[in-house]
Image (cartoon, rainbow, N blue to C red; front, side, top):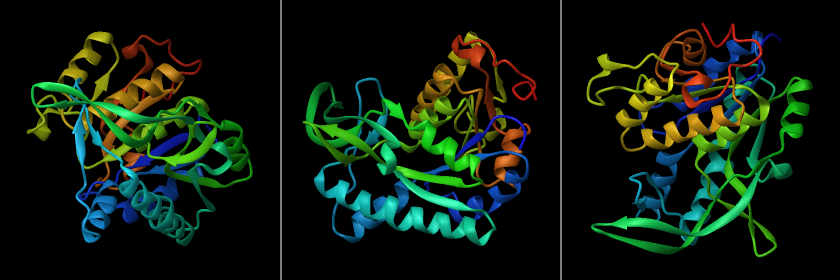
Length: 290
């Protein structure tokens, strides 16, 4: 293999054909080591609804929208993400000839950090604290585990939950899959590719013709952060965390493109370079300048 590894995050939005996107990753593996991280928000919401549980999303005072994970939701999350979706993803990749190994963030302490049992939310004009959340903030990544699997020719396929610390116990807690992918890319010094249901970051979110293709300076980064709305805000946070943590490059691109992971690596989507967030370029920047 040549070049730095690639962390490919496959989104869980309704418009993303997760199975087809996963299958298309196989041809990338002839030239790059890869780690796959998958989401599953739509599948979790659908299962909650089938069980008569209303999915709940909250907005932080900073305007970022995310899931509120109470105990019932956490139980469904565990069932859907590392259970059905991760198993399906591994089966799809193995069918395509990829030696995939499924992991959750708990396995081997892959993703770990403290549980956040309370979150600050914006409720109309008021800010308040919601308690009873089962989410966590990633503080460490077991990069040795991933590097060992990659060295042996395996492709790790990773989903939340993560290993949360709660009063001395390790418990499964929800964590955002974009930010999980970012933490992994940072730990491996990898390129992060976030595949989602839009072409990339759009200057006008309602006009796909306003795609921002390259972000290389702090001023350009400020334009991107200003343009991001809704769930794209979390992806922008993930890109910044990846780059400030040591990732070589970060890309948001269209999961519906032909061979989407390769299309993203070779120019598709929005490419963000480390310099945009005040980080030095990697030692070898040939890849980052494509």
